[in-house]
Image (cartoon, rainbow, N blue to C red; front, side, top):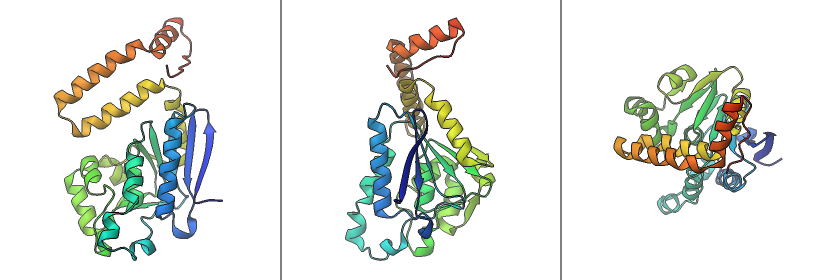
Length: 254
């Protein structure tokens, strides 16, 4: 078996499972490239509407591969191919969920923060301990964490190297839910989202992401245009027809 396992556990849903248990699912350059490739493939496949990323029962991902980091110099860090891999993960246009059990540290926490919805187990731990290695987060760990959890939480984690437990992560908005079985709950959510109109789901994701960065008036204007554009879709007609006819809609993504 490879470092990344792919399966389709439900209609329109693809699951990516990190599979480097001997390295605590450390995100090597090769594994990160596989994740980016898998997301690119899912983005281009109309049969896939939602993706779930998960890890092992004790560790989601314990960070970057330290053995790789030990060989880096300044030019190597600046020209690192990982930057392009992370960019492709960030640009994934469809709903992306993460099921986090155990530790999500460093790059693992950054990977979870790229998800649109994070479901965490009761034993989950989140952190950016890069400072213990004499460096700082390099894949959005300072920027995303500050936007999602607030500047005070980001400062505490990035400067101290301490971890947040699942309850603290939920309280500060880093995750959406705590579940006794995060993999099952994330899959349940993914199935539910995959049954929604895919064009509307993609636009909804864009709108919510824009709300983090765009001024309110810009975001509202974008929202209104997206709202109006969806009236031209066959899925809108299907949704309204199903509602009036009291039946379950069958959305085709058109």
